[in-house]
Image 1 (cartoon, one colour):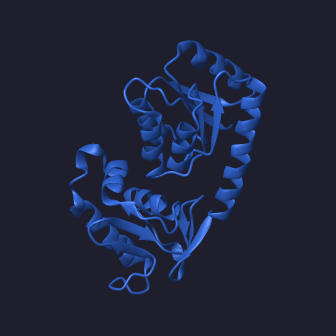
Image 2 (cartoon, rainbow, N blue to C red; image 1 turned 90 degrees about the horizontal axis):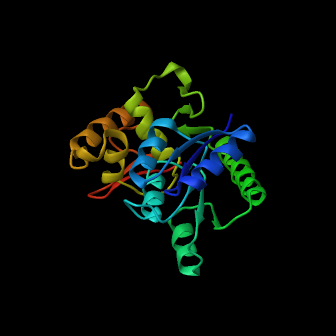
Image 3 (cartoon, one colour; image 1 turned 30 degrees about the vertical axis):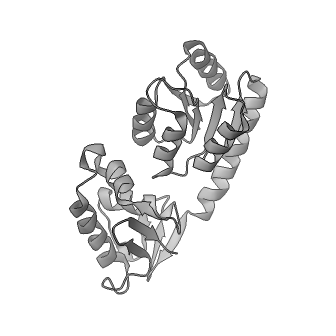
Length: 222
């Protein structure tokens, strides 16, 4: 069953979406602010996020940035903001689609089906990657040759692999893997990245896939 996280501070919209989505056999979680959305996304791992931009504690664009720091899950914005600049800001931040309020439920469901189809195609394309001599299956979380990773190593690797070629900052990685209270603990990153390289890179002292950008962060190079 497809999981949908709905983020909106209007109770009537949350209720209407929950009812209509559940009737279409989606599993629904609903929250009313940005902080709860980020926590729910990390803990519940939804397949799609429906996101309002006007949230009480932070702007929805900041939520998009927070999600895109570690996930490629589809984000469909539902907003009363009609200005082109608002739409561009959301899409540039990483939103997959933008629906203006008020909207028809049939149109919304069609958009949800569309972003879900794209996500399935993308997940299939990224289901396995080759790192050095190893084939890493991101779906089953297995590695050829019986190599094993710890849960923390998997979490780090998944963030990097889901964003091929993209520089992921140290702060993003620390916040998503260890929590925002640890964003200055760069020694955690160095230790775990060294472990990943030792397990996956042909020459850990000269990595070609799990690359450090000094002072900034890390990048996965296929």
